[in-house]
Length: 92
Image 1 (cartoon, rainbow, N blue to C red):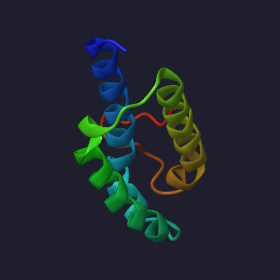
Image 2: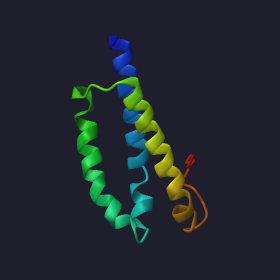
Image 3: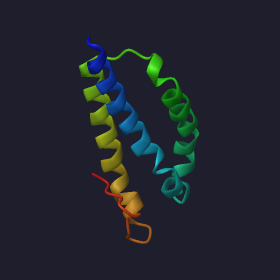
Image 4: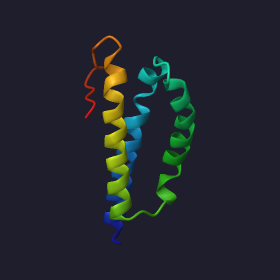
């Protein structure tokens, strides 16, 4: 894999992880959110070590799809709050 390809993979994975981590304040408000919050420490740790991980395009696509699925699953519970998304926030 080329260096620019590897860098692109890292950017895409970091974007997925950051998107999920940005939901932490909203998840803290949910009844079931506390169980997910424990996993945030793992995500944060992984994000810090991301530059040492080698992934394929297929891996990145799976991570992006899993992120999309996760966000889709959260649409209902997060919409049950005040009905408003945060500034600039889209759950898609």
